[in-house]
Figure 1: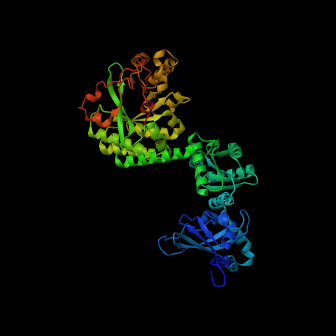
Figure 2: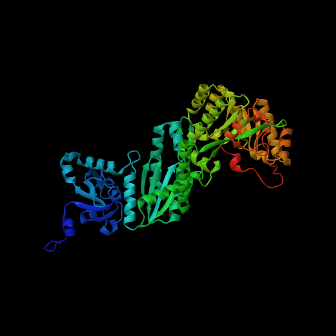
Figure 3: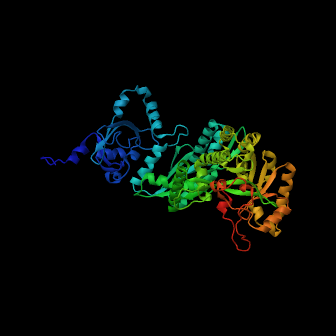
Length: 574
């Protein structure tokens, strides 16, 4: 305090420059009167809030946090969202002790004097649009939405944040082109505007993701709003060169209240949205604590997969395919295992879905195919034949077929020694891509099998549409084949049609001797399952003397009557 009784705070409050001091996470620790006025908050409300969120466009700290260099930016600030009133601010940020000092000067008058008065109105409107609007849809942009959410939290308000994300939007862009995708975005924005009405803040976060801030809204009401929007969007037709389709959205809802940060609220809504996607899309999910645990586990799993790909933590196990009657091994299906030495141990059913969603499965499929080819090179015996699985995501990889064929040609491996299995579900989901890959690989001599055959609707139609060399009967039809069930009629039909088309048949999930007898009577010649031979590490198989690969494999103890069955994660895996 000066000798005349004037305090430093009083001096700063009287200054024509707005000041704020934040911590290193840009949360306000102190601000003067003018800064509070710019933020339209009381000093008490602003303390602890994110300054870059409230003052959208302000930097997240100095460009050189360890030095004395200022970061200077120009910011256009709307005094109230949705109006043309604005301020043009010069913002400077520099390091101050254990935080940052922000200095803000209103230079609106200086800027306006540089513009012809006749053009000023258009100029001001353009500034606001640039600052707050999404250029495609005219909705609020990401920074305006986060500012509104942070303001609600600063004011002590409670409510809900709703996120909406189009399902399979990539398909629209790929099939109809990006202009069609832009039209869908604009149509969707108009539908959301009409159905929301007044009192809510709607914006586009980016891409095909929209957000709604719902002040003073409880969880049940937020879910009803989300369902109303979801149902309205489902009525939007998308037309183009390949007919008319309907679009759907997945939604995530997260409650918010004073004391939370906008980042945490947005993250919670995003976790709920992901849960909706994971549960099958076209649904609304409310955030729960378990969603965070699920996501943390998924991130850990993806890290383990990445490390295994680069550090040698993936292994292949070989399951024999056996000719019934002679018990001669005619080939091996290669199954993927994660053997990285970390706990908990993860089976294919636990890590492959995460890899499929993230796109890491593209690298996995190439690793599996490449490793199989390397093994065939090292053991150039015609009797050694492998089958590898192809994921649905890899069907979309236009370079996968070239990768395989180039590797085979460079290694001098006969293509007939390598087969590929595509699940019927994946093939139906992307029939054109499955047909293209199957044609390319089969034309070069590789074998192509349709896995889990019979599980999909219209299975026999796919035999005509896909250039395959074999089918693998879905294990659900094999499970009760020895009990005289309807499965007998279905399997007999598959065998007869496949034989008429010149397509081979393999049965899986064979667990009992009585199943072998039933399959043999129906004309099935090749099968696999724990009764016929369990999977073993590929390196152990290849370490055995040449020729022993073709002999009767090691058989699991007969589990008939014990109630024991083959683990599902062993039966179904890449």
